[in-house]
Length: 125
Image (cartoon, rainbow, N blue to C red):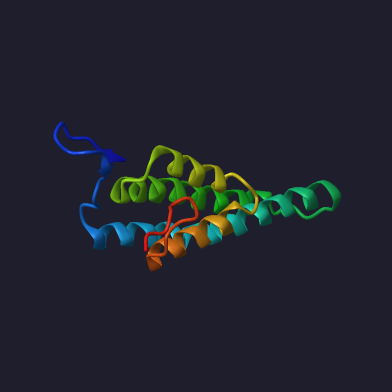
């Protein structure tokens, strides 16, 4: 989000509460890895259901559903707390619906927690 003012040039908005915003990112990061893993396991269970007599889809479907809902809720909280651009929030959501996207999201969020600049942000000297 960009703060607009009549008298000042456009600049990024500061984070309201840095501790709460990092906590929101941390929660999202903690759920992104298991959500990605549960998606892969659900896909494996779907294949096994069609090829064998094993049917783990009801269990893995429920587990993945709960983790996905948590991911979306925590994504909304982190996006609001960190004042992310809508594009960044959309990218994080798209990563949640890709089979290995949760792992990429976890790495991006870990960098943000450590305070490292994102790939899209230019580094300032």
